[in-house]
Amino acid sequence: MTATRRAFIFDMDGTIVDNMSFHTDSWIAFFQRRGKDIDADEFFRTTAGRQGKEIIRAQMGEHLDDDEVRVLNDEKEVVYRELYEPHRKTVTGFDQLIALAKEHDVALAVATAAPNANITFTLDGLDLRRHFDTVVGAADVARGKPHPDVFLLAAERCGVAPEHCIVFEDAPLGVEAARRAGMRAVVLTTTLPADAFAEFDNVIHVASDFSDLTIDELFSS
Image 1 (cartoon, rainbow, N blue to C red):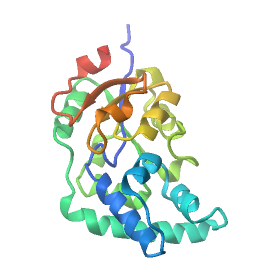
Image 2 (cartoon, rainbow, N blue to C red):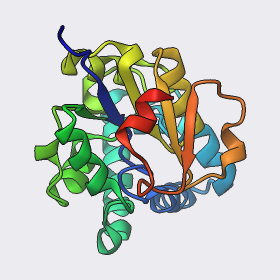
Image 3 (cartoon, helix red, strand yellow):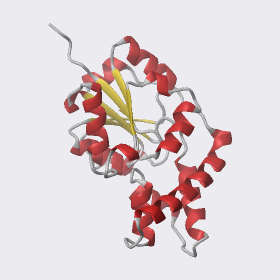
Image 4 (cartoon, one colour):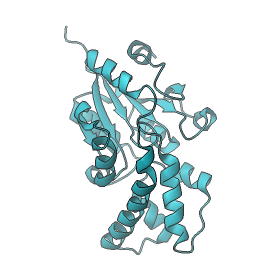
């Protein structure tokens, strides 16, 4: 009998790399230049996982056309990459976990709200892209999290049913997107404490990093 195909789907920012504070700082700097003060904690909780174009329109107005939004979003992402580049590295235990996944024939995917330039900056900058069966980003789906589109597309490209996928996330909107996709989730507390995810019934594990996670334990949860 053929074994059931399984997959790990990783959010990128705040999960593969511990960088969300740099994203928040760059958004705050971006909006402050335009006379708009942002509360950092509230901003993260309500926007992490959303696409940049969605955040810009929510904060600056739905009247902006696509070209205006694209220019503004590119400007913000340049600020982010300048801030984060000296600190770029994977979360502890990530490299070991994906190596184990390969040994167990677990498909690997990235599903992120990041634009292509940031995907290149992170995955290619750390030589990670070659490990993944597919990478799905903001350019591939119309809607960001909490909509499930990015996770469903990643599962489809891997040829794995949603119920056999485990999502790794650091943000409530991402965990909600996984729930809507019919997927279980592992929460990384790189950005928020465990109690921020208490309401989610699809969370099977909460960890500070990847170092103590095992394949058998995760898929038996």
